[in-house]
Image (cartoon, rainbow, N blue to C red; front, side):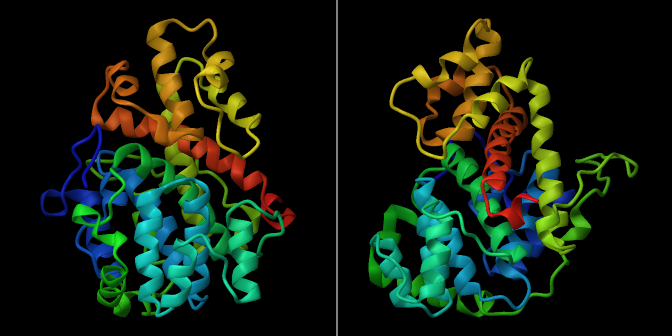
Length: 331
């Protein structure tokens, strides 16, 4: 249980924007440490945007938390993210739906027809998705978070893999029950977006990505636009970021074949110094669980540049996933 390739900023050591985000996260989630967010701490603006989308989609407002957790688990299962599957099994226990949590973890399907339809959509089995911005935002948030967590953290949620024990899962869920069932007011994370900080400077007149139509003017859309903008900036680390976009555009939503043949076209003709980061971005987009120590070592980097590069690959896949949603989401 720990981080891969990076040394994140711990909440007690955080300053500026990262410290502000950590404080709200601790209050709203009931956890002092959330590794899925800590992994992004070397890029405070990315940390803030990811937290904002997560909070406004998964946690805020009156929509059923159980339904949102079903979507989170469906996406995480499809993306083969064991950390997020484990974590959100615990959060589904926290909602009180213990049988549903265990059913999904075992590979089953919800008995409730609406929950079953949401799970089928989240796993990519169907294209007929919901209209609620919170559900669409949850799916997109986890398409991003799954990729980043898989690349930068080991699979275990609890020390020694304790989340694999049913009694521990139920007990952990009980400790999270009060914050998970609390009604959080929407929009309170938006103050972290597009705000200049010493550790995340950004001009107030900087161009901003437009909120998507599917968000219907909700805070979810503002947070999603901020995440796609900030994460997309990592493409500046590549000489040919269009290679990543073109490869992802051809993606059918499945998992790439074993071996590296599927990377060949995107890397063709690139010198080693350019091929290494392009390969990392492509792996982050389509197969983050295949990133190796060798892949990371082949590209000289800092924690900040590595997180920015992986975020670019991840958000390229997220944008592709957005376009494959229902007509309401793609408009």
